[in-house]
Each structure stands twice: as C-alpha cells, then as structure tokens.
Length: 578
Image (cartoon, rainbow, N blue to C red):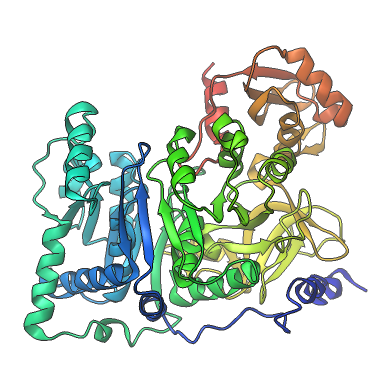
C-alpha cells in the first residue's frame, strides 16, 4: 500500500467506533442551524432560566447573567449597531476586553446584527491596536475602560466611528460594582482618564431597546439570511512570527467545529448541568469556540476569570463553584499543580480537562490525573481551523499524542515537496475539513501560500502511528539543526519538565561554529537546589547526545502570550541582545 493509500484509508476512524459506540456512527453530529445566531438563540430559549455566565474576581466578588438576560441584552446590542449607529450587514465590529460579562453579550449581539466580530487582545500596544483596527476595517469598537488611554492615542488614525466602553465589573450588584470600580480607579489606578467620545454599554443597550420598541423590530431579520458560508469572525493570529493576520472564519467553520467538539465530549458533558471554568481569554480562538460557543450551546454555567495571573486569581472560582470542566494550556495546569491550595483540596466535581494551545507535557498530565483524578485530554488546533483538528477521545488519552483527527477531518504528514511521508516519519502536518478558514482577510497571497489544493499547511511538524494517532514534534520554524540532525525543542522541554525542581523551560538553538546550531535551555525553577550540571546530566540519561543542552540558563520567568504559550521568539531575541 502506498503512503497516499494508507492515509486515504483513514486508520483513525476505527477509534470513533470505539469511543462513540453509543452514538452508532463515526461522523460529527449535525446541528440544524445554518448560522451562529440561530444556535445562540436556541440555547438561550432552551436554558432561559439557567445561569449562563458568572464573572469571579480574585476576592470572590461576582456578577452573573442568565441565558434569558444574555439573549435579551445581545438582541438590544444588535439593534444598537444596526439602527442607532447605522452599521450595515458585514461591517466589522471590534471587541477588546478580558473575560467579563460584557464579552458574550456584545459578541452575540454583533453576530445577531449580521456583522463580523473582530476579537482584539486587550494587552496589545497602541501600534498593534492600530494595525488590527485598520487591517480589519472595523467601524465600531467595544473596549474595557482600563485600556481607553491607548485607544485615545490612535483612534483618529482608524476608521472607527463609534466606541462603547464597559467595565470588568459590569452588571455586578451595585454596591459590589461601586467598590470594585473605586479600587480599580483610585487604589490600583487601573482606569485612566480619557477624552474619547463614547457610549457606555448601558447607554448602548438602552438606545437599542428604545429603537427596538419604537419600530417593533424582530432581531431575526438581521440574521435569518445568513448561511454557513458567510463570514462570522476575523480571528487574528498572535503575530509572534510577523505581522498579525486575520483568519476569516465562517459560520460554517465554527458550527462544524462545534459539531466536532460534540463528538469529543459526548457522554462526558450533561446538557444544562455543567460548570466550566474559563481562565483562558475568550478573545483567543480556543476559549472562544470551546468555552464560549460550545458550552453555551450545551447550557453550561460559565465561570469567567478576568485574568489567571497570578494563578491564585483562580482560587475563589474553584472554592465557590462546582467546576466540572476546564480548558487550558500546559502552563495553566502546571501552575495549578504547583499551588498548595489546589493540590491539598483538588476539585472533587471535576469531570474533564481539555488541553491545547501548546504541547501538554507528560509529567504535567500524569500529575493532573494523580492529584485531580479526572481525565486530561490533549487536542490540537490552530486559529485558522476554528480551532480543533485533532483530539484524544476522553478516557482513552494516549501520552505525548494529540490524538486522532476530528470527524470529517483529513490529516496528512508531508515532506518539503508536499508528498506524503511513510508512517512514523516526521513531516509537516496538513489538514482538510469543514473547519478550515475561508482565508486570510484581504491577503490573497498569504492564503495561496497556506492553502493549496484545499489543504491547509500548518507549519507544525508531526508524525502518525500505524493506527492513526498523531503527535506534534514541534513548530517548523523552531526546529534546531545540530550537525545535520533535526532537534525539536518540545522533546527537550518535556524531558526537563520531569525534573521535580523545574517549573518550566524554553529551548532554542544558538549559533555554533562547530555544529551550526547548539541547544540551549532557559529554565525557571520551582525550588532551589538544582544546578546546570544536574539538568544536563538528566538530559544525557534521556536524550541522544546531540539533543542535550550545551548550556542551561536560569531565569526568574519566561516570556509568554496572554494564553500562556512560551514565546521562544522573545527568548531568542533576548539572547541575541546579550
């Protein structure tokens, strides 16, 4: 059998039948909805009296909204966009805020208005904000009050004609909201003064409600015509490898991925009865699709943590709510497992943890299962794929594996010429499926470079086993070439993570006269008492000689994205400056 024929046989499909014997089929479940507003409205009506979102602050103060309230408020915001500030269907509306009650309301309202949502990282600099606003052509912006000063400096350089301002404490009980806003404004000095002409979110909703009542508007008229091929979201890549690009994701991309997520959690998630912790930012595609959309569709109670850093910010959420599900990246799980309050009193209600965004270290996965007692299922995906590509069936997790392709998804491993490689050989992961983006917004050449003959080239290096499981070797751009040998940082970082005194590490290649590149590790310790020599000796026992770090440098912390991915690019830049 040729390499192509073996991939065409889809050896992973046998695992669907094993994992989903009760379902009786091997494809993703099919929703009847043609667009996201229809799906959102259906969930809102089904679970109308259930709690939908609770924002939990580090001190335990909180605010909450029911499904019915989210539905009514997002309808009002949709009318505000279309009737009060006169946006047309397809207009881009940017949202820039951390996890808080306003985010689902305005995100759903934008979609219900037939507009296109643009998620913006609230930690962006003025330069990054200006780029994304202008690249997307956003005409309206909803922003949290803590970052309005950055907006004030660049607003005139953009096409934004209407700004709406909100607060992390929005819709908290009045007394609690007053205390929090006073602390943020006067004690923490986190809310700057500004001269931006804007509506606050309550004013925007009031205007929307009044316009809806005066015209007897049915909000469905804005979205009933939308199909799965229409664009719903511009989700910008992190920009860690160059200028940030907007992945154009359709209603169909996102709904298809929800259908595929259903197949992952089937039998483990009980509709209307789950409580999920959202510590990852919902402006990131992982939390946006899985935590916000998929669990809203399932009727879950979503506990929002505005910032999980320091990790103690999550403690009250675990103390006060029966958390049954969580999504996170390796650094989040590792941080929790290093907290005494978490390990001594692990959440007894936890049913499943989902890992993605970056490689889940085996040492972290093993500690999670031992301490928490719940499965931790690693998956794999990208912004451009809405995001899920592969997953480990819950309860059948395989160490150091991203699992099997999601239903209706094809994955191949190819060489530099695009030819499939033999099973077990490393190569670039390419993917084809209903979740793959329409393209990069207004970047036809970038789209053509990444999507060829219907296949999206991920830039990740992986391998496939005989039975259709995949594993990530590393990012193509992060590969280190030592004397002609390919060295992948993930493997070395996973090895170092097995040392009990190590908190985390980053491995990069540095120039070397003899070998071309040499391996160098940057390590953050959990506790003192271990030396560079100890780490190198440990690696020598576990790795081939050319993979062993030539040098180990101890740092107090590593640079990371807001999601928690270690930024090797910034580590390399710091080394070059030395």
